[in-house]
Figure (cartoon, helix red, strand yellow):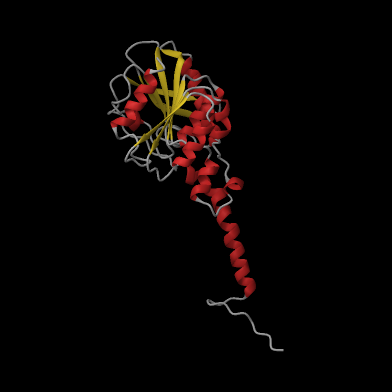
Length: 276
C-alpha cells in the first residue's frame, strides 16, 4: 500500500497547521483578555473649559485610594436645587455635554470625568467607576445647595451601566439612560459572536441584574438606528425594569448623534419636570 503525505497549499505538515490553528484559537481570546480595557475604555484628554456656562465651578473628589477625580458643577437658579449626576460614554470627555445650553436651568448639573479621562487621575475599570459614582453621590447629597430628595442619574452608553449600579446602591428620584444596554456581555456577543465573551469579560456592567429591583422612574432614550447599542439590548433592560418607565425613540439618529435634535432635550426636560 502506498501512503501519500497530505499536502497543504502553502506548505507545512498537518501538525504544523494544527499548531497554527491552535495558536489562533487560543491567541485571539488571550489578546481580547489582556486588551479589553483598551477596547472598552477610550480615555479622552482634557480640554480648555472656557466655553462652559457662566456659574460653572470646578469640582474635585478624592477616592479612597487617593485618586483625584475632576469635573464641574453648573449651578441652578435657586438652592437647594435638584441635581443631575451625568455619567458619560466610553470615549467622552464630559465638559462638552455639560456645555450644552439645553439643560433645564432649574436643575444643577454635575459631570465628572472617569478615571484617566480629562484631568481625572488613575485608570478606569468597572468596580472603580461604580465606587467613584457612589462617592460623588454622597458628597453632592451632603451639600446644602443640593436637594438630596431629587437627585437623578443620567447615563449615556457605557455610563448607563454606571448609573444603574448607582441606582442599586443609592436612592434616586429617577434615571435617564441614553443608549442603554442590559449587560456588556450581551452587547459583546452582538459584536463578537465568535468570541467566548462571557468567559473573557472582566468589566460586565450587568444592568439587567439590577433592573428587577429598581423602583425609581426610568426614561430610556434610544436612536432609531443605533449601530453601537442595538435597540434589542436597550429593550431587554427596559423590559426588566421594575419601576415606572417610558421609552423615547429619536428619529433619524445614530449612537453619536442621538442628542443633537431638540426632541432629545424636550424628552429630558419633560422627565425632569415631573421630578420637581
